[in-house]
Length: 322
Image (cartoon, rainbow, N blue to C red; front, side):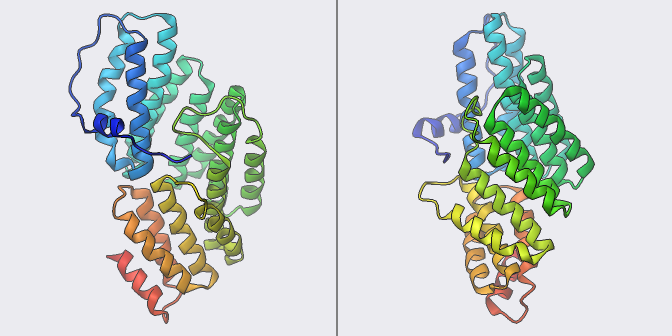
């Protein structure tokens, strides 16, 4: 599940983006090059956030689009649409990561159009799911629910358990954000059930595993705990299980999980544990360029203010506030 960069990946990322002439005919070589670059950029985003890759992604989009206009076979055309949709989805997600909701929706909408042109139900579901997450973050919950409903339909057509689970988990977060715990938990149960279908996994490195779902469940319980502290214990148990896994987690995801684990401890009445984990998160977050993580850190800071007489919690609040 972890996202790691090889020496070759780092070399590819360090190469400056330059205008590359469009080949007279596009074949599998060009598609493979674009697919590999997109995979590396997705991996980098998972480690360091959208701010680390957004410029590089946008720089590649112009050249990638020109490939569609060059002569190529029908088989290559289908592959091109798939990779271009992935790249546009990343452009949208990295824009969302740095707080640019407008460009995020525009790029993701383009990814959806490309996927639909190719009759690619999985990528259509991924784009719609991302649109729903962007709307959830913007607190536009009506549009978020509409997007998740359409994403569920596309995921069902794709017959992909990972895609279905991802959409259900995202929709559960929207339910939690609007104070609907029963709907949130019911939707998480559907996500668990969907993962039993191993067919048609997501394109690498965007796999969706049981570990990722467990982490998402912990984040959702933390959201519920900020509204009803009785959910704090479930949040702590779930997030502790996820963050103690022996394998390497995606750096950015781990930072989100630990932030919410600290928040859950602070909400549940254990300021020492919350402050200890919170300081660990602050060290990690310094290397991640994500406005969404900053917003989660602000929730953690607000939770620390529940303990004005605890010096460790107060110190954490001051550190995050700076």
